[in-house]
Length: 376
Image (cartoon, one colour):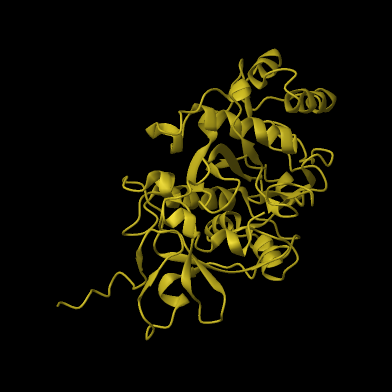
């Protein structure tokens, strides 16, 4: 679990006496339900990563199941690729039981009986059969083309366990008008649609998760702000972005029409394809390694900057997003009081606008883009 010390300066790292751990390749999926809700899994308390937190389905890339990822010194190591996409599909299936795969004959989402799905989850998790082979036996193929890249996150260098995680969006087929009235809480069956019957999300029996549930992005953010669930910065930040477009009605008795749901999805996809801001790269190319600034927000919380890509990509053309920062308080149980703010709103304008960050990158300019340096 990430803690306060994970985001503080490491003198050995800054001096070059200690090298950061090599980030392990992983994938994660923001899975959008037929009613435009987001799936989160509640990790077990004993987990060595993100213990007790709510996370998107995902996990480590496996060469046995997913294919080879480029070596640490190769450029493609931190780029979207087949192995990352295969891992995203496989891990979503292992962790939730939802199979993002197409039927080889008809091209629609494949339907596998529940007993076969559950048996397959266990066999694949235990590497008794490779995911591609099991899926081929069912007459399907991973729907890798349905994945939409939506940022990459590299764990800060001070954290003992580090990951280079490719995030994706995936939209399950929209519900029909008649079934859209059914609530999609993640407890009962998902609304049906004209393309396929989508499996109800199920946790993995307590191996890594204790629950799997769809809720509106706004509801997940509300629960985190109220301290009822733990969201780490990547999950909170991406839910914050999604919530700008996937709005749910306050009353479950008045569901959104298919046309509105479709319009919301189009707006989100258009947003993801564009640059994150006027000075940032497109969301598919954004690479973020959060770093703690050596100053606090106006309300006393620590602040994570999101504009650096991590030491592995220092000197490359990869970068994160500069417009936003993440105020946060790290406690024993994990991150609390997490939020997303515009950089210019997080600090007093009268304060010093240049501070040193905590990872040896040097100076970090905190001023808004429209404020130029005084000429000397």
